[in-house]
Length: 335
Ligand code: HEM
Image (tube, rainbow, N blue to C red):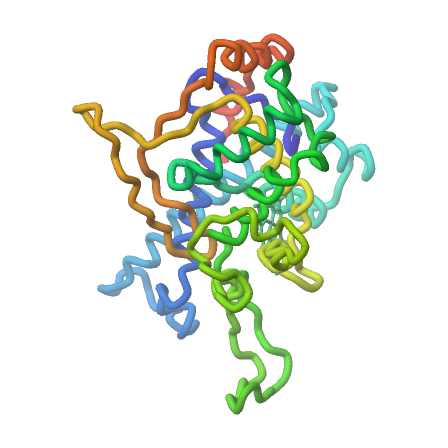
């Protein structure tokens, strides 16, 4: 969608790996207070040979990965355009609208906006932890859709419980639990605390979404809180940021997560992972630190609900056959 890049469906895809790695490094780089240079910017002038400056090497390594993640897929898309392949994507649209000659400034904007779009994403809901939620969703999907087809986005209004799962996932574990840092533009006093102009402020989104006065029993994954006559406030009003820098991908993100959740719950049974003796493993809940926080990996078992559901899954591959991947061309690009 962003670059017109076709992944390798059968192996670990290099572009997905580069983007994942760059995103993980971004999450580590933005852990508030983890890097002294963020607090004392003058430290950036300390020469690299000085003992204790390993963070400079880390920064250079991570920068190189970020440049690779931003540069390689854009170059691939530009090569395709140069060959006359204008398969619709965000990059081809940009060139269609601006003409083929773009300024260095526009190219830099295109590069970083494309990467933000590519990297923006989310983790899925840990259904293993809340089996009753899965059962309720399945009951709703079977009743409304039946078992002969997959849900589509036009079914959304008829699947309120599935929609409530997506909303509850945004609240239960916000992807950006501390939002994105801001700097104050004037001195201010809030609740007796003096906040000087230029202070870095982190919104505590985690608290907004776990305030028990607003969301009772906040660690419980309870989609029903958004249903009925007194629904809880929609957390996506603040989990995507706010003001003029609010996430521009929020509608796309919510729609694609809704489809993923609805379709996965329609066809898969998600349960606890098993150890080598076949006993169930109780998942341990952990969240990674940083601006972008993920649920730490845990074992789960994901199986088609029945042979009929398996046929539905296989049908997708027939309706939308895999296209030839761009991996070989991507590998040849050096940034
Ligand atoms: C669950 C998925 C997502 C979440 C939770 C999320 C959340 C956020 C948050 C909290 C911000 C910071 C807003 C602020 O500064 O107040 C942001 C910014 C941004 N997001 Fe998302 N996002 C998601 C998906 C996406 C997707 C799919 C795209 C692109 C297609 C995207 C593109 C962007 C961009 C470009 C910005 C920077 C906007 C700016 O600084 O002006 N995001 N996002």
